Length: 192
Image 1 (cartoon, rainbow, N blue to C red):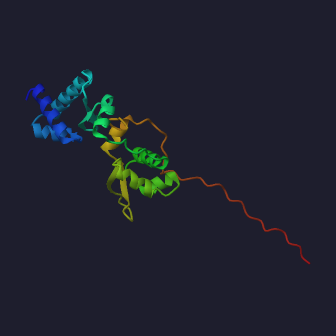
Image 2: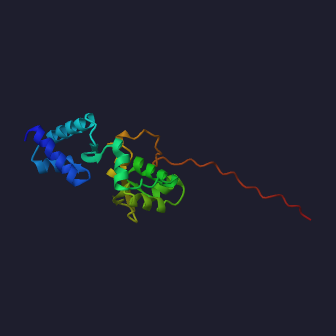
């Protein structure tokens, strides 16, 4: 399949899907080499951007998604009468940050870092499809592990987690040094 035809097929699939499609899935459907898919999709992405078209193609991790251009957001919102997504509270943003940097992260890990119960924040982030379950940790109790989603990448305008700014992570493997306890002396009592 020549590159122009490959681009047209990719454009049609991404438009119809309405969500991120993995490169491997595109390659299988179009019976093409994944490298050819990436080359065609990247070229299509550049052409749409260069021509300042109303649609764009985003590269999200190992896949692509068709979206409307950010420049057209006001028109799209007005035409579809959609509201802006609700903002994240400070606690939700803290929780999301922990999941993004430490994923897969358990509820206990999140609460250890934050120092407070995070049940509501985790539930809210899952409802907003910014995090999802990614299995269970193989320890007693088998706690659920959480990771970020493709919606997280799209919402924050990044194509992979490597684009997140670097931070100094907490090392959970090091023992915490405790201050020495001093002996408590009994107050002196007078004998009568």
